[in-house]
Image 1: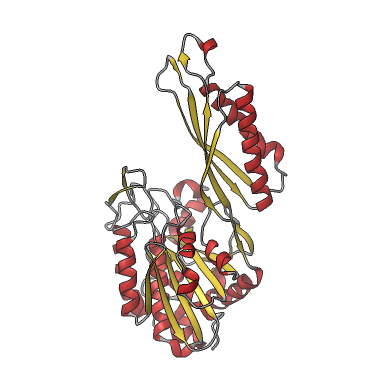
Image 2: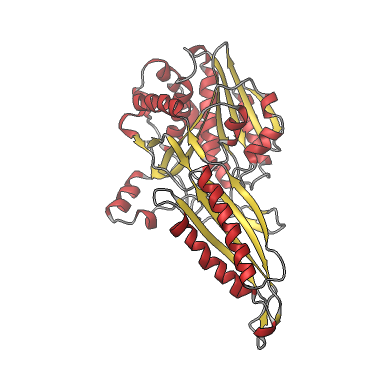
Length: 427
């Protein structure tokens, strides 16, 4: 579908603007390959930010740089009218790419802990950036077709959950006009060309917690002289499983995963401490609070039961807010998508993944919506469905094999941003 577009059959104002999509497509595909080949970790998006600012200026768009570190903002003005914020995230992940693509990443970088790691756009942020740049150019070159202001916001550090807050804390509100509505999208392991909306809670809140519990070290032959931190950690892991099964209502969705345990150095040495790292996903703030409280209660109780010599330590990090789509905004965007995409518009199910986008509209005090687009070759996806092996045969976000097909993914994402914005911008 590289040479055709859903927009080809669109009429009216949307069609007049999207008629320029073939010209945008000519640079978008190469731009995307370049971004994919040169990913950058969270808070290190210097090259990406520079390319984004340069492309915005080429399109005649007002640019503001350096907000939240590497954040970039493009402002497109077309007279009086609503102010629409469209956001794309820019950062990549410490993943070794295994797609086999000619433009696969071979980049390596130093992470926040000082370790050298491989880097890959394993979550599709390169798609998001490229689509928003394309939509910005189309809206800027056809400003006579609409009234209002579009803010194209390119955000750093989504993967670590603090990029949106970083932009807010660095003066985002003062750097842009007063916003009326905010919107964003994400490429997902669904058939390319598909668009999906969801009303209400869409993506989970996420909290990572590092827990350190203390024992008393001793020789492995003399456990009576020790408080065994390994046994203590094991009891905590087992008991934590009862939170979801016994303390959360069956109708509530909660995922609690202990992803890491580090304790001890040798088989015949009883270590004096253990470190557990866990991840929590919830869809309701009260449930989130109650589960976090339950985790602390259980850990403290198990430490007391083991006669731990010190109180446990808790560190909450990488917290992501709940993404709750506004009903009215989502309804208006859904209706616009229905007119434009027709049968390609799907209802998007709730997902346990997490996002920090909502920190921006929440801080600005405006409603928002967040939708998904597909990025998997349609025939490949159909074969996987027929074989009943979708989860096994389709690489998902954050996997070494995640590689959205260039088209119609870029066309669809670009069109979706333009159509959504125009649903708010006065003619």
